[in-house]
Every structure is written in C-alpha cells, then in structure tokens.
Image (cartoon, rainbow, N blue to C red; front, side, top):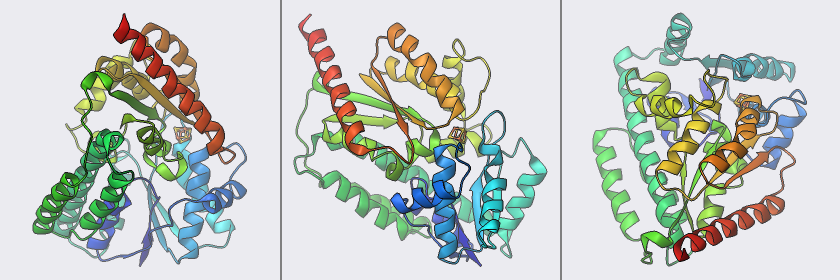
Length: 362
Ligand code: SF4
C-alpha cells in the first residue's frame, strides 16, 4: 500500500512511522510554486492558504501513486474540521482514488480515533505500532531540539551556510534510525556535526531574539513561509518558533504532557477567554511568553483567509503597546512575494536594533 501525508516540517521524523509499519512511503515533494498553483486552482477561492497548499501537495502525492493519505483534522470554529472531507472530494473529482484518513483529537472522538489507529496499524500488531510510534516521537523530539538550537546559533556562524549544511546532515543521520541503537548513534553524530560549526562570540546584550508565532502550518513549513527563520538568522537574529511538531503531539495526543501549552493558553486568558480555533489563543499567550523571556520582537505569520489569525492580528497593536514589543504581521498566500516581504522584515530588524541601542544608551 502506497502511503502519503502532508509535507510539514520534520518529514524525516514522521515518515519513519509509516516505514516501520511496512508501508511504501510516498513523500510528497517539498511544496513549490507548482504545488501552490495546483492547490489554488483546485480549491475554493476563499479557502485558507494552508488548505490550498495541502490540496496541491495531495495532488502531487497522488501523481506519484499515493493510495492512502494520512492527515490531521480539527474541530471547533476553524475550517480545519472540513479539510479532510473537502480534500478527499476534490481528489475524487480530479479522478484520484486515494483514501484520505483524518486523525482528530482522541478526546474529541475516541471511536473515530481508534478506527483510524486500526487503519494505520494494518496487519501489524499493536505492539509493533506502539514501538514505531514511540521511535517516531523520539526522532521528532530530537530533531526539533536540534532545529531549535541551530536557529539560535546560526546568526553567529563564522562560515555562511554552515548551520544550514549541518541541519541537512543531521536529518540524513536521523533518516537512518530504525531502533534505539540507531538513535544513540544519530545523537552522537549530531553532537559532532554541531561542534564543527565555528561560532563568533557575541555578548548577551548584543543578541537579538525574535519569536515566530502564527498558524501552525505556516509556522512549521519553511517552504511556504519564505524560510523566515533563515532570513532572520542571516540578518543576525536568533529565532524561536511558537510551535514545534513534537510539542503539538505532546498537547494533542499524549495525556498529561501538554502542560507547557496549557500554561501558554492561561497567559492569553485576559485577551481571548475561549478557544476560537487554530492557535489564535496560544499565539496571544506566546507573545506574552516571548516578552517575559526577554525576546526583542515577534514575527506573526498569518495565512490569507485564516479567521483565527485575523483575530490575533486585531489584538496585536494593543499587545505591542502594552508589552512594549515590536510585532510584524506577514500575510501569506499564493500571491506573496519574497522581495516585498524582505523589505518589511529588514526594516523591522532595523527598528529593533535601534530600539535596543537606545535602551543600552539610556
Ligand atoms: S487555523 Fe486558519 S489557516 Fe489553519 S485551518 Fe484554521 S482557518 Fe485555516
């Protein structure tokens, strides 16, 4: 059975799950302009941007022969709850027979979740499924940790591109992990790879830290957010995202492990007291959290036609004033141009530098 999934962030990690279960894995191509155009052409005009990119990605996976697509869904007041159904219908209308299986939060629909787990398990035993899931989760967590570290040190690399090169090598190491021994080996090779990045010494007071918040898909997937973290790193800023896939798994799927996200949501209570869909509430909490942790600015990524992030955007001017932190909202869609956004990002970083200098002088 040829299986595929959305292309989102650390694909190296979650393709493992399917490989270990004996599926033939069709990794959809990294989203490109073609993916976006295919998706936009075959989606309702006012669907949100991630819907369109996923549509394009699924079509590309089907072109490569995918027969079964696993994805995650959603419920509540955002459109993610309709995604799977509409994607499946569109694929059918285009003549593709791939089945789309959507995983929702287990607490929301236990029975549906269990049926999907059985579908994923196929002929494997539950023990094998558990072992594969656990290894996948560990690979995902370790890759997230590495990526987080690389975006913290990348602005200080002596040789341009060495952190990016290291990231590719690290992903290759983890791609070969199929058991605990392999994991330990990948971990030690990763340490060596990271040690080889030569760094300039920079005083704490001269560091600029920028938090990235926004809708989960555009935050996690560099190919559709213009590689925002690399852009900011190249401009000399450390970056950290509000979302990492392993943390999303902690919150959504592992009972008792989502404490961090709950804490973040509690911080947002004053501004949004109910869950309004997507990660709008978390994003408000992350603004406060980044400020409390000494970050100098925040970039907010908002997909076009995303209602939850539209709400976040409307609260941002007030939060920027109250918490005295610059926040730049970038709207992303199939028309987004890198050059236009680059100018805005550069101006934003200049503003933060000037603000920082003024603070040190006074
Ligand atoms: S959070 Fe926004 S972009 Fe994501 S599915 Fe919901 S409406 Fe679409």
